[in-house]
Image (cartoon, rainbow, N blue to C red):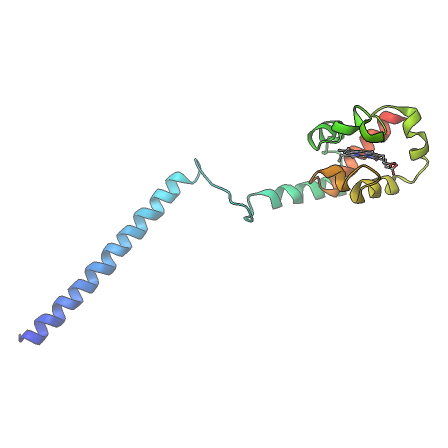
Length: 147
Ligand code: HEC
């Protein structure tokens, strides 16, 4: 064995050790990630954090009659109550039949559209990020309360 061969051998051994330890590090990193995943799955903006699945659920609910969306609780959670409870800024109050009478002469679709696009002092979607289905559920609830 000459010096050149010994050097080659050392390099080969070095490479083997490097890649060997790399593999170990990867394996333990994976193991750590696996252990941590159920506890702290962090969701960053722009990632699909299960919201797509939730939306798909909402859509399929809407297709099957929208029965799963609770208009009454969405009315509060999406912020419609802020104006429609008090009648702020000329908003027709919840359950105020008089204020709703002329509006109910419109097609329900037109009422949805007013909320999607905004009307008068009401910003588009009432300023919320509610989906079409959620807004429709709230409007259905408001109509039912006004009748
Ligand atoms: C910033 C206050 C405000 C918020 C928040 C708000 N609204 Fe309104 N809303 C109004 C006002 C004011 C009007 C009356 C607009 C007009 O006729 O000029 C109105 C009108 C409406 C109408 C009748 C539209 C028509 O064509 O006559 C519906 C339906 C409605 N709102 C639903 C909602 C829903 C659903 C939400 C929540 C997603 C919501 N609003 C949030 C202020 C608000």
